[in-house]
Image (cartoon, rainbow, N blue to C red; front, side, top):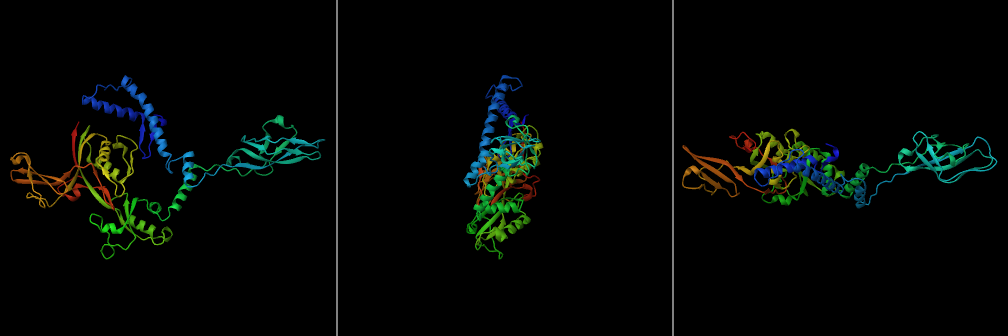
Length: 474
């Protein structure tokens, strides 16, 4: 497929005309199986496929147009005049290209009986390159003289038009100058400067932005990310907030709640939990006096992972290795590029969740349904392991018989957090499932916390899996 049929979006993912047609094909085939439509013939050359191929051309052009608009508003992706507009916001303008200038000497082999004038605007050539240089004003070789000097400038601007001495030796229009006149430049033609590139102008804008933001959260964030490659994001929190229930603990060297520092700096690394080596790198950056505003004092600690235990029910075209689904979920949470060998789409890159980001179920569904072999996600539940729950109930919550009085239908218990536990009856007694499940649409976090995928086997010795995965063939 030609490159122009591929659009790379801001998040690094790509969309092609083929993707659009295949998406339509899958949609209609799924609808056909559910008897919602009779449109199902997407074979090459069919009327339906030809129609969608035509529509895909307009759709990909729309993607390309929207992509260009999105890129035009960000410093990192804007180009040309759009980057100039951003520069104006910082009272910056792009350095303009400059023409090359210098002097040329006209000469004749013998004295003439009258003056000889070379007209303003005469074009002189650098023979090797064909570059053109314009005479600034009339130059006259006076009667009784063999030479005269004039000023020239390159017709176009740019560093390429700087020329070594004795290289401007020809005229563009021979008819404008008598054939006895010779020309050369006794010294180099200099001063030609290229217009400022997007890359250089972008860096100037960023530098000004950093200077204006000195001592602010964005400036400190930039310093930290430059000082440690393993930092994903950071959060600055008032320590008084951390004295409240439900927030990460913030202790001083005596093990007591600390309120003396100005701000707590939570660090979210690309791996969870945040390694001590990364915290030391951040502490080093924040201890350099030239990086700090007077009076700013920070306590550095790692963001506390909020481990997410999941129960996933999927319908599959083929059985999928649990480790593959786990890898896709972890890549989504931590950030990174998905393994193309296990992905339906190529070039999928996730930015990862920041501290205090909200997690939506739809996000997880999209991640899992991109796994090769997964047809669709039937359900996702949040799980919680309660080691203290027994057949007698838990913390004032009692078991409720499911259905009729027949114990074979089992029992259900719902705790105060909304997790639903099950207990089944067997010949020798009752079996309690200490993993409760909870439906959700979104999960919100408080300051200082960040999501990480939890492993069921790390908290329950009877488990040998990371997530509770239930697969059914389509």
